Length: 570
Image (cartoon, rainbow, N blue to C red):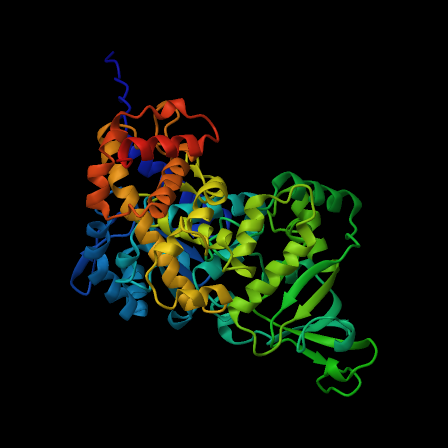
């Protein structure tokens, strides 16, 4: 009898392994959040309106269709994205036509959509997922795309692993979807407000600025899960405007176990902010209540806009997200699903005035958060730095952190600094801010970039009012630091030392070495020896033979002295 040969397993290349992992990470995010992956459509060639192409994945959630493109190319990303623009533009211009095309050519897609929604009820989202940094200039060519950059992938991985199906609400927000875009809400039967009974405090008794209203009320966890947002560190919002920590799995699990076993709500209150279009109604007259005319607490009906991501969670995110939606077959979910609707959580809310800007909202929430958390033993320097960006943007520390974030986006220091919880083997941002860049960008002294800046209006920064002038100064700082570090990168790369790899004892990308170079730049400013990158390239040649390993821990000044002496001391 003939023997059957076993099929030899094909060994994947390093590139294929990387692409497979990247793909699986993103697939996991969508499926754990409740989306269904459409089979038999990935990488299949399509031809829509005469243009050929393909998509790497398609996901569906009720009436939401997500088209996904993955790439792990580390170079020439523009050459990967821009040729797709013609097809992507055609899809954007005729989304309904594209849906009909997919239904006609892929039975699995037609089956995934079903018959519940009409063609005009669907929403098509196109997502581009690059593992490596894609320059903003390329993104601007296709502004309608959702860019799921790798730091955001890692963030959503953490979120879906902690709050499971309830992560979909934040995904909706990230994909720029509104409440009325999703599911049965497209049929226009969505109630405009969520109505809860509560009380309002007289404006004179709140001690907040005029126009802010303070209320207390009870609300079901289900409503909070749908309507809340948290400005978390490492999230997808503007990195300079977020500060709360990621959900701690152990803490949330402990609260969830308490809910399952005790089946009663926590009695301590949550602290939230509410949008300015929240209404306070006198239940006896049906008229809107004006807290500035009250002299005592009054019962009211609080009408909260029925929108996703509209309630700002300042304190209590773990208590809220312990009620998250999980696999319906899990034992805990069978109990929690009832509690989400049945229980009510005590909430203290602050309603914003009509005229408040987005920036003012963020600053207000940051200040409240800092008041609650800054005196705790575990309040870290990083937390205070991030909130300082919002509350004290003209301080040296805030300018320094903002400059570091910009340096990390482009130039020789691209992607060098640790900006996310998952960043490994990168340079600690907090240490570079505190012991290096803070003194370099300060608004005084003969050794700061402020001294070097030739702007005739720079003294206006000292008033702490002109944001546009501050942005100009930060751009100048970024330019000067990049001019200095470009030749450092060239010289040390040739020597094999431009790396953060701890196996290289002479690595340049460490807190000690970078701070040493920054302090050296301060010495150059003080001694009027600055120049452009060509000048520095000639002067810094001796650093190729410097033994950086000699300088331990916080010996920044000692290293700066050596660099200055060997390269610039004439």
